[in-house]
Length: 166
Image (tube, rainbow, N blue to C red):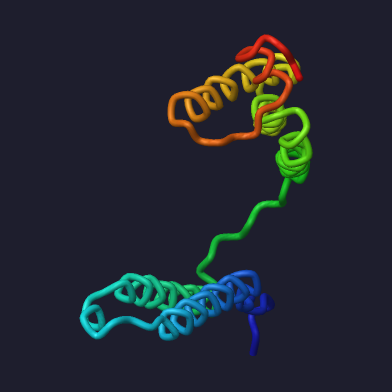
């Protein structure tokens, strides 16, 4: 005799099982690549292979734990995704990639900064673009002039360092 409400068992969490498979696959790749390393006999005991094996073992343990949690159904229910912020951030990243070679580091990274700020609901786009561009120029200046590292120079960088935009 039943009481009228069937017991609702949660099915295994498919997304968690996919994550577990990715973790296990990454561990297999790390194990395999590390086993292919050729080392001199002096470094065979404790050498450059120790930490990749430790990391791969940790990934296997995480994969096992994820499978167990997925089968038990112990992950909390996920909320519905809001795709607008994701599109803003991805659009900003695409804009930065496209602008790096033409407009330079400061302007390209300013676009990424502004789009990310917009995704998080901050300030008007023009204001966050200006803040991001100024901050990015400071980073470019420190790296390019102070550390002598190469970052893409664009119109703004050339204008402020040499006085001519070309």
